[in-house]
Image 1 (tube, rainbow, N blue to C red):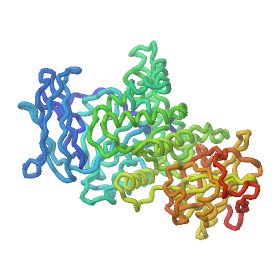
Image 2: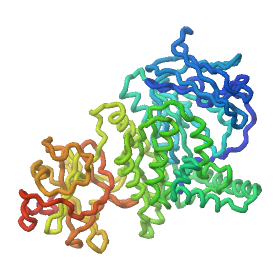
Image 3: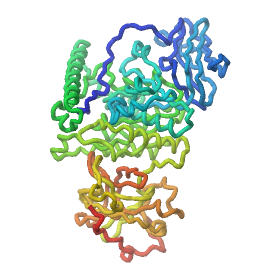
Image 4: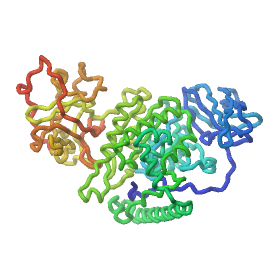
Length: 624
């Protein structure tokens, strides 16, 4: 789904371009297009260099070398191309030995009498940024773009934009290139990836190069980034393929071309209207923009060459750069799979596994959990399809249950009625902080928002939640962009009335009701360890051992509408209150709990009827 943002992510089509000289071809030798002058190669692990030879050269030796500025040899390795010929080519891959960061170097590849050289090659950290439109949103279109571009010059921060296409487009690959970050170049870089890379550059070694491989298309579902074999391995994946086959069944090539042409015309007209509206009023509100221009014509027509068809970008983009040596993956996607949100967790796990298999490495996978968003008309009608909470839960679950997968919470981000929020610095820098701590071992970098450890249901109908990473636990604002102006300069807000707390309770009827929430800043560790607490976070290393009580916090929930709670949820809306933060400024991620008591009675634990009552939940002078 796309709304009026002034951007039509992924709308450029794969029109045929004039033939251009192939910069990565010399005689029988072909080198993959991602290899180019000014590239960044991955440090401290074998460096994959790959390409193809002409069919009549199957089995020929290929040599790859790295040379220093004075021509001295830094590294050399060889391999033989495959004896199998596919589509007229024999594939080859050379694995150069791992190298520390450094450069600039020259990469030279030789096969027989043919050779190709790339200069100004650096060795550092390389991350692939993948997904759909919110990863694709370019720096020039993001919030504070002018300031960012003025300050982006950095010869050690470089990026490569994989041509966006649903079919292999060698002409586009021939014109692609690695570029240094500069005011002239970086406008077309992913804004999220730029802020990620800039943060790495500022926190790691100042001489360490950082490269970003931009590999995304706006409007793509997760099925676009998976193979047919992967999709066919599950019912959920097969459903995507079936829907695609039904969409193209019985149509002629002429129909495909006509549908595509008509859609492109509609998109061009919409883009022109948005541009005119922004030129007339640079500060135009999103609601007004949507009212004037409507939503971007969506979805695009599906064709056998469409970049939005299942598996299209997987073959035409991802496989073309695989297995370029990487530090890890960044992933911001899920919006297009809203309608089938119940299958997203399964497909996400399958995709992560397939990508890692392609790279033959358990590479880190960092996920941006979807922020807040709801369509303005849907909200005005009082509806919420409640699909984005399911997507967020799927993303968070993948991070909790798959090794070396992490997710950042952005529930405090997003824009009402704008599916493409312009603040890309927040998710970019949170991704970087996640990498700095989890991948690069910088324990001082805060990455965790308040995370629920467990709960206890009291006989009076109150629910007590225990949180870790709860230092400075407080409520702040309500929805993205809101604040607590009435309490500016006062102590953190510790109580929230039901309509603003984000917490909801449900009884046996399954109906959720907003609940009053009260934070208690003085948590007795003995109370946590010795009480009958239902543990829900078994990854919590702090639980049950002596620790500083400042890292543990408690919140008590209650509502007269639910005298016997059996379920609770927090921030479980497409757009709604999500005000819980710690003093690192990090939000609590959305979650839901089954409040069924599954603790075993202990001899030292008093019977429930004699349990100490929870603290009263009564709004005081700090309540809002």
